[in-house]
Image 1 (cartoon, rainbow, N blue to C red):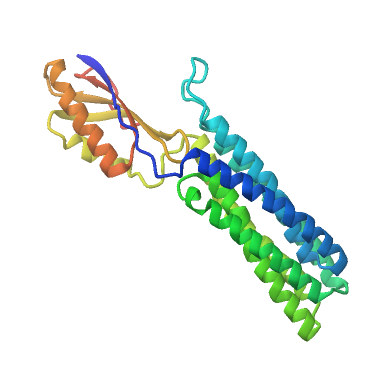
Image 2 (cartoon, one colour; image 1 turned 90 degrees about the vertical axis):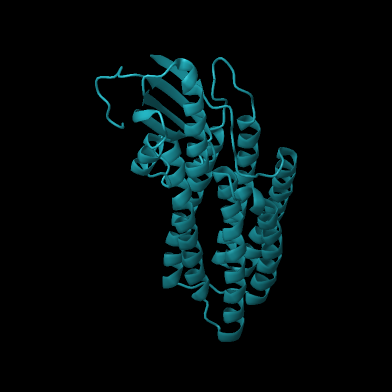
Length: 305
C-alpha cells in the first residue's frame, strides 16, 4: 500500500512587510553613498588610512544593499513550471557575494595597514574625528533600519553586518583620532584598520558558511536526525521511517521528505498519521514543508538515509 501526503502549512519567522524592508534598504543605500563621499574626501585630506578603509567599507555597503534589494525582489517572484521552488535562493547568492566582497576588502586593508606600520604617515586627528563621527551617525541609522529584518534572513543579515561593522569601525576611528591628537601616536590608525578588518572577517565567515550549507542542502544544525526518527516512530501506526531527506530551501524554509512504513491499515487511516507527523515535525523541529510517502513493507533497504 502506498500513498503520498503533503503538508499544507508553511511557517516563517516574522519579517517586516516587503515594502517596508525595501524602503529601508533604499534609504540605507543613499546614506552609505553619502558617507562614502564624505569619508573619501576626509581620508585624503587628513591622511587617515582607517578613515579611507571605513569609506571603502561604506562603498561596499552601498553595493551590498543594491544586491540585497535586487535579491529580495527576485526571491518574491512566484513559482513557475521552470522554477517550481521559485527564486528564493537568489537571496543566498546575494549573501555570499556580499560577504565574499567584504573578505577581499578586509585582506587588502590589512596589507595596507601593515605597510604603514613601517612608515606612519602624518594624520590630521581633528578632521579624522569629525568625519568618522558623521559616518557613525549614518551607519547607526542604517543599522537600526535593517536590524529587525536581519533576524530571520541571511541576505538581510549580510547587509546588516556590513553596516554594523562600519558603525563599530567609525567608533574605533574616532578613538584613534583622539589618541593621535592627544598622544601623537599615528600608528594607532594602522592598528585600528587591522582590528576593524579582523572583526569583519569573523562576522562574514559565518554568513558564507551558512549560505553554502543551504546551497549544499546540508541538514540544518539544530535538527538531531536520531531524535527526529524516535519521535516519528513513536506515533501510533508508524513502524519505521526511512529514506529521509531534510534541507533548507533558503534560511527560513525547511523541507522534509521520507518514506513512512505503517501498520497494515486502510489508506484512509494514513491521513491522521500524516497530520500527527506533520504536527510533530513543525512543533519540535520547525520544519515548514513535509512530503511523506506511506508504504507497507515495500522497500528492501530501510536505512534512515
